[in-house]
Length: 593
Image 1: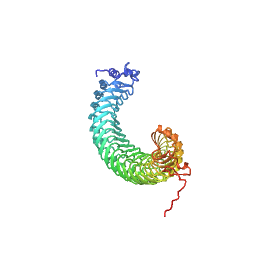
Image 2: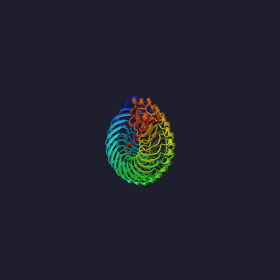
Image 3: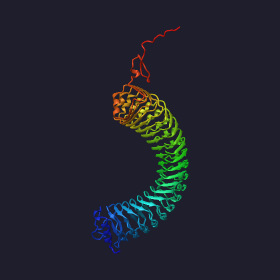
Image 4: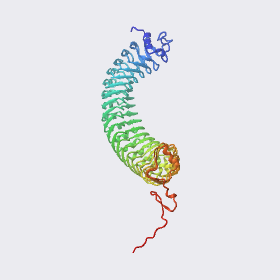
């Protein structure tokens, strides 16, 4: 080189606004390799050449000068976390002594990644992620056969096919990170040659399509995370993937276009512990019973939003270590729910069985999930029969119990009152519940939203104990039932309600209690219509019509007409008729001969 070591470093300093670096100690003064006053983050060999340049997160702004390729003594170059822009100079390929790390991640480089990087054949770690590199990835990167730990190009704008030559880096054993780019087409089967991989295989959020290569089953040393989600893989998932039996953390295949049967061989991943994600695909047919072999799984079994059908395998109950987020919703499972679901005794949150076609009686064993704290979703199925009283054993449940849109019948068990920690979302609407609403329902006094029992066949009086739901802020609906009797004045205690108080389409009688006018901060949906109400409208209720959007208390009622119980004995009436006075005397008919 015709440049001295000082001059080469000075070109880097001047090109990247060195005067404003966060730290630039001793730069541009004396010998860069001085033992007494070395330049910040510069180390030198005994021959006086820079052999390590590590200036990370130091506010380097500007473009790298092409002369950086003349620092031929460099064994380690790390300039990550700065604001370097423009193209990465092709002269980087001259730094053939770099053996440890080439790290320029978290900058603002753009344009193509230079193919000359492939000449750094002794390189063990490559970090160019979080930049704006675009275009095709150069196939020459397959020449980096000394790579061992990290090949990281994620969060760029690479496009086109992934080079098959990358399969030549057979010593790579830690992280293969290609996620959040725009790679497309078939993922190369040659990646199956990376059989030393152990930690993370990450190609998610790209545009890979067509079939998933069966050769990926050759990565039998994988123990960490296998992330292939958010692509467009199609066709069947190869059974060879089950050979990744050492995988012990996370399997992410969700949001693709996989179809057909799910391979039973996945049951060989018996060490998988935290996450099994295959949701948002088009898998169909039965869920294989071998799924019950994933006994190490503790959290997040998510197969929702597919087209699985038939019986949910009873072996699901073998996942006895499972604690949270069992999502089988939005499929086509049918027949009865296996009673073995009650064996998931460690479950604390997220049991989602909704939007399927489960039928028959809900097994009483659901009450064995006594550690469940949040989210019990059974809605939008075809369950029939009584809701088991054992539901009351779920006394730790604090949020989200959803049984709506089924065909549950009979009375609501009084044990519902034992769910006294429930704060929001109690949805039992659109069923066939009958008989009276148990007074114990008032024990759900911590409810603050979504108390919904409309569109059933509930009868009898509305329990006055519902006034204890004084923390409720929106959605109180008992409409479209067969309630009778008067509106309990205690409902006025639900005074924090801002939206939706609906009692319409029942058989409620008597006058409107003035206390229900205490719902003074309501802004929408106040309905008492289509009942048998009578009497004067209390002023406190009438004034709500000026502030509440969607207000109807009069339609199909007899408001303004005196109620029977307030009339003298000389009047006769029924709740559905206008009162009329009794005649003073009954005329005697004149006989005819």
